[in-house]
Image (cartoon, rainbow, N blue to C red; front, side, top):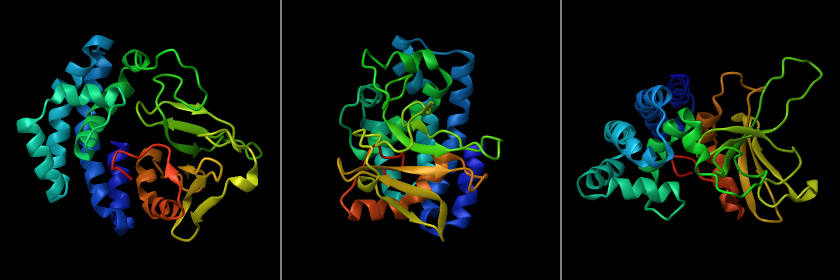
Length: 253
């Protein structure tokens, strides 16, 4: 509900992301029921794909049909009638290649279930231990966030937010999330203090990657997974300068 409310607010405040924010609001509404069902009856690892297809995918597809662009509506309708939905969901979970529409649908349907069912998320992690990846499911980070600590002289740690299950974990401030570069001169910051004061891009000249940082201290209304989508102008600027995002958001930016 908080994500939905923030998306509608940003749709009014930031005209350049009005369409994706309206879609995000619809998705947040569609994700609420499967999230609650996964909380109440968490699926086992071997039931995850079937649970997503049964409990989450229909609502996400309905939301996409009601609030998406004409192109998205046509693509979703085609997938509903012709697509192998279980294979689509399984492929996304395994990190396989999918068409943009399929990746959008699968990700939006899977996310609330993984958020609500940590054991199912944990089954995706495998044996690789890497502080740059989610400690729960092993996913890539979607964004970084700074929050209030409640203490005037204490600065909170930088938290990374998983693109797959939304788990947060601490990561050193002056360290590239992709290649571990630590030299400040090689890590430029791209920002627009006037229009997007609580958002910035943290880039790296060593590996040419970047991710968006949401500073909730500068806008307490911010909901990181929603506000990150509003960083679209910064995404475009970073792309123009040759940087690649570590993980695109659900809207494909």
